Image 1 (cartoon, one colour):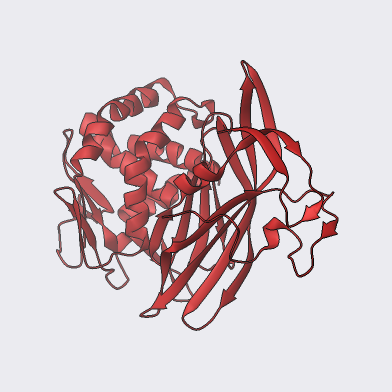
Image 2 (cartoon, rainbow, N blue to C red):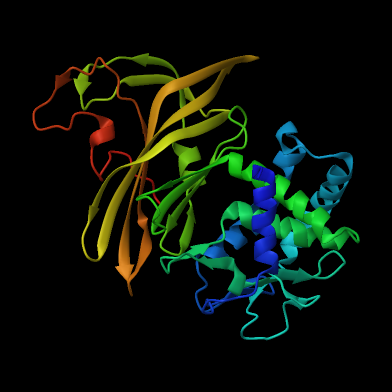
Length: 355
């Protein structure tokens, strides 16, 4: 079975299968305010996809990789035109088929979502179908790309009498493009407690979206990464650790790409976790008109602390530290009792961002 067919089958499974698991606590978005009793990571993935859907559709419309035919491009262009107003209206609700039997039943089948046939119609998401149970008994939450497919399908109903099959395929097209530009790095394989996600829109003209998943929370640290990314025209080498080189003539990059992200170290107790990520960052540095200099020698470190509350990890926003640094070969002289490099300074780097 091709990857496209597998993706279509997976999305349809969310739409058509009946619930066989316990009900998950629901969140709701009513009148522009978030209320509810603590919805899980799947609900937050849907909300994040809802907020970013305009960006994802724009990437699809400007990329040949989305492989839209003329009719699909017409449908998605209609959605894109009305989406800003629809998202501002915040007509997204979470509910449960188990708690309200029949509400999500359409044509005799329990659906993952339902909506009306006109713009600004509310979209109702069935939280029961946002989680799938593995043979081990663990639950897997719907991912951001899968949430994109669901939302594109529902928004499509607002702009014409399109068939479910048509909207399924369109949603999968955009979902697969998002998946191809999204890298996910879990702290431990098959663990959902800690992970980092990087969405790369354009490596030359845009900064990446960087999201931390801590417990059941999504934390967008894109602004912190953008603030720390910097281009330097000249550098005066200082071969003594930990004294940094003298970087001169600095400016913000036109775009950046964060890659090779990995968990460098973590320190865990029963109730506290200190973690650190390190990745390479390449910045598009424009110092002269029409001359693009690519800066590839820098790394980016991300460290933060989480605390376990009621057996769930909670992110400490005040603990976030983001640092762009270099670890060049010529750093051969080391001051006594100093770490080997800026990138190995543990959890208290010299530059700390105020949140």
